[in-house]
Amino acid sequence: MTTNKRIYLSPPHLGTEEQVFMAEAFASNWIAPLGPQVEAFERELAERVGAKGAVALSSGTAGIHLALRLLDIGVGELVFCSSLTFVASVNPVLYLGATPVFIDSEPDTWNMSPAALRRALQEAKEKKRLPKAVIVVHLYGQAAKMDEIVRVCQEYEVPIIEDAAEALGASYWEKSCGTFGRFGVYSFNGNKIITTSGGGMLVSDDRAALERARFLAAQAREQVPYYLHHEQGYNYRLSNLLAAVGRGQLRVLEDRIAARRQVFRRYEQGLAHLPGWESMPEAATGRSTRWLSVFTVDETRFGCTASAVIKALEQADIESRRVWKPMHQQPLFTGCLFYPHDENISVADRLFDQGICLPSGSSLTEEEQLRVIETIRSCQSHSSGEALHVYL
Ligand SMILES: *Cc1c(COP(=O)(O)O)cnc(C)c1O
Image (cartoon, rainbow, N blue to C red; front, top):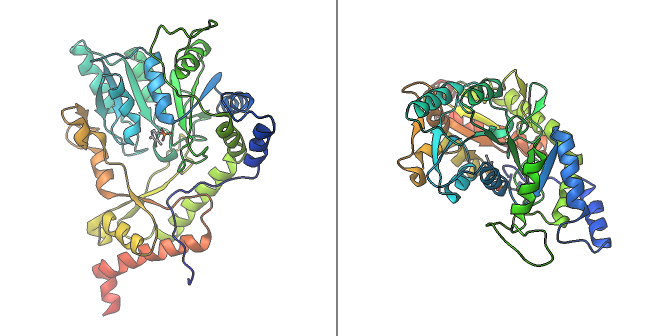
């Protein structure tokens, strides 16, 4: 415990083959623009998740933006979104001048509540203003209740976009997160389970739509011998160099999932017995990657708040975070509709109040993790009345 390095929440973890693929790209002088590494990365990722095709992009946010464009979302139209998420899930709705409506979480997976979604769709139908899309997030590496969500969206004929930015490698029954909706999106941002330093992927079984995504992501340049443009496009393609990194990372994805799940198990062993300390549940319907190890802290039983634990960890040079502040609570979205899980109880609000994300990197050592666990235990014993008894 002498040379304590800072412990990060979710740092990159390189494998051994990234540099091999990078060297290939350099040797062929093909560091840009698009090229064989991009094509191979797309093919390999599509195969891994079981989608018919994939388009490599500069970010996950770009993927959500393109998916919305492909569904022709326009100004003033509605898009239903998970409330408990990172703002990147919803910003692209604003890019298109559309209006988000927020759906609460349910307690089993912390993801979109099918009950709240059904209520929202019913009301929308009565008002003759159904959404043009539903963006479902798979939070922290765990699948949403896709059976129910797909069923209710089919009933109302609303297409689904899956924001699987945090859930590459996660499954629902035997199927990969990101392959249930019309489109699925993954992120390779620096903190995700695998990374290209920055990047994303759009997947679908609709090959024609993916071709159109490629076109839009490359400035919507028409296939003629000069520069001809009928439509507004974007510069959203992934560079060949970063695709090389992605190919190397994809080869260690299974190891990374196993390591993150192991990190979570060690936290459970070290902390589960503390009163008021609870784990994010794992639904029996699938396999969570445990991209982040997330817990809730009940202040009255644990003796202090999640924020106090985060502060104590910071003092020990350990990075931890609150759970996402729900979108319906964000000043950016003031005035947007919100449908809670139960008429008057918001699950997302409780998770924001109580939630804490602990260091979860696949390279976290057992010693480092022990430091995290001991710091948390010390928060509890200092503040709880029961533990004070022992001290007296
Ligand atoms: C990371 C993340 C994104 C955005 O991905 P980028 O590649 O950073 O653009 C979108 N949604 C969620 C839920 C995320 O965690």
